[in-house]
Every structure is written in C-alpha cells, then in structure tokens.
Image (cartoon, rainbow, N blue to C red; front, side, top):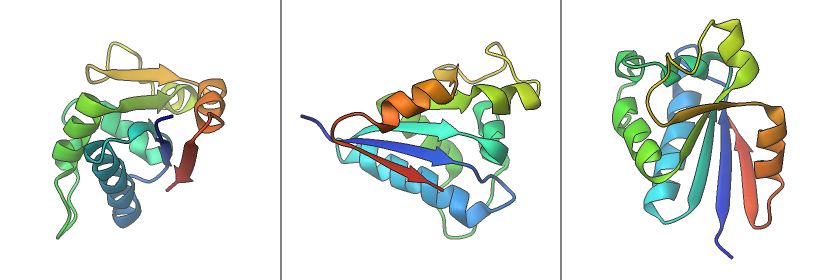
Length: 120
C-alpha cells in the first residue's frame, strides 16, 4: 500500500516560515513518490487564487509558485470550504486543479490507511 501524506497549512503571509515549510515538505514528498494532499486553510486560502503565490516572499526559500505547481502536477490541492466562503472565494476563482472541499473530506483523507497527517 502506498504511503500518503495529508498536510493542512493554516499559515500564509502572516507566518511565512511555517507556510513555506508546509509547501516545501509537501513538494518534497511528491517528488519522493508519496501521495500528497495539501489543504489550504486560514490565511493560506489566498494561495488558491491565481497570482497570489507569486506575491509570497521568504529569503532562502523555494519560490512558492514553483512548489504549488509541483503539488498541482503530482498531488492534490484542496481549499477549505469554510475558509473559501469567509473570503468570498468560489470555484470559478481558484487556480485550475484546486478543489474546494470541507472537513468531512479532510477527515476521510487523514484517517486513511498508511496516511500521516501534518498541520502547519
């Protein structure tokens, strides 16, 4: 059975190091062949919108747009339903490949066999 990693990132520009760590760990896991599901919640919800990742800056960190692109290509990226609603973000607003889903889906993913869940 393939190992899976579910990562919930709650931080955005408000906590750039924590945000960058979540995206970096997720991208490295994808590159290592791990099945990855990255959840954008809280302030990271904004990265579901086109161009927002490009606005993120952190010295000595991999560019967030590159990390996000690798996750969209090799993993799954989900925007929290409630987080999207609080920010007036709809499915028509998000980057292609980003889905919007709620807590029930997160719980199903996090409790899967061979799954490790991390929260940043």
